[in-house]
Length: 171
Image (cartoon, rainbow, N blue to C red):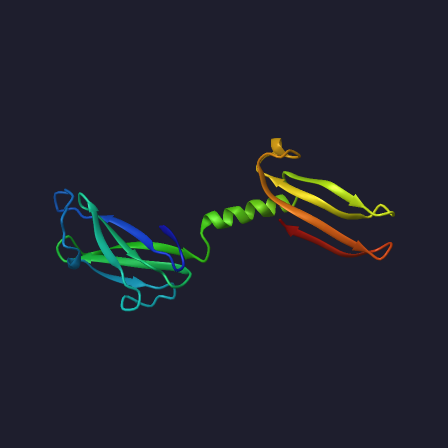
């Protein structure tokens, strides 16, 4: 299964072999046909075009840009080598995994994994007014200026005794 991101080109690679299992290079890309099915099961070949090109030595690539999140299905046909079609599934997400990984790491930091607070400022009643929060890539770096993933400033206000506001902002 291939993973992709909505609005960005996804690629499904395939090889073409003859009956003796030898790779078949040089096939004219226009001899391939395809069906593409959206996540809700509709055949959308007319509205979601697929381009097919040879990578070399009998290996080919089909590419398209998905317009919705979910599981897509691509079927590529060749009248001589696979008239029944070669199929592939493409799971399309709204975000890529690099983006999600950064967000997860930040969440782990905010739940105080590899987390440090410093530069604390207090009022006359020992209420914490502000501080700096840092989250780190690893436990060895906690409290240093090394491997900082993100930095925040915390600000709080009080009515004398009770906290009124509490804010944490990413720098």
